[in-house]
Image 1 (cartoon, rainbow, N blue to C red):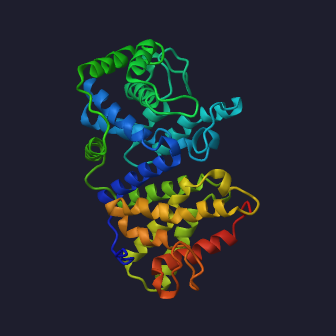
Image 2 (image 1 turned 45 degrees about the vertical axis):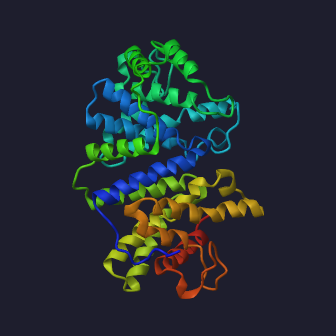
Image 3 (image 1 turned 90 degrees about the vertical axis):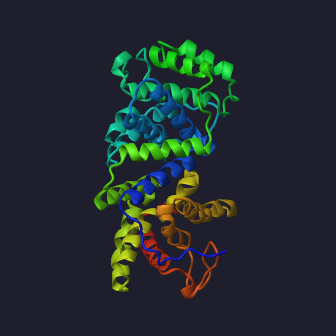
Length: 377
């Protein structure tokens, strides 16, 4: 199989920024574990419901991003609710879970061009009767987009198998919408969704339907001319989000990126590769979102199975980057940053100059930051 070149120039501007958003969506799928397609399914339903309620293209696009990013705040929060789910959460864990809309809203608010999405994310667990969270809004106080996300999220969840119950049938889902109208759901929103379901015109989820909705959302929400600074802001956010999985590595991705750029410059690498190493530094641990938090924060020696889980993060991260055309050039640096010059590293046991130069730089910067940071082990 042909290996991707580590010297491929980076893609910047709108394509690069949109690629980062797409990677963020894919990371959310990893973080959700058993809810891998929950966000995309909710997004497809929410955008169709928004269109039926008369929302414009931009508002529909914001709905899609809201559905995909509404649970960002769950990353690194409560493992038993997310990565290693149990049927019943302890009361203190339930209270922690209720923090996730505020955490999600704060994260989304900091993403350039998605300011209109933040209120939808913040209030997507509010109930029409005021018994939701976090602000206990009621009725028309709840933004229409958040009302749409609430019912789309609920209907999608009912169709999924959960630790505490099997998937519900479509008849049971409709009954839940009818019972929740005016209590959990806005009456107009619930009525419109029921009409769509009864009409048979609602498109079922499929990868093609989702990709079409995502493409329209990008065109409607992102400007044609995305500044490099916005890409840098999103990279910083991405690195911080990855580091939330492990409290001992806070700021690790940012520090590795900051170390890697002057090292690459001292090696007289060309300007495109300096930009690439900065991006790769922020994204090199993207696959760690798939590693259980209990493994990342374990203070004692890892079992062989746990170590294998950690090792897989490089391949997982590289696969995410490879799946996004505008980020594909960063995949080799991610995949090979734990290789060693003597061939004793992982994932392929490469040695010497067979290791891509960007991966070599990340390896030494990653090791330096690890040695100079307090870690659980």
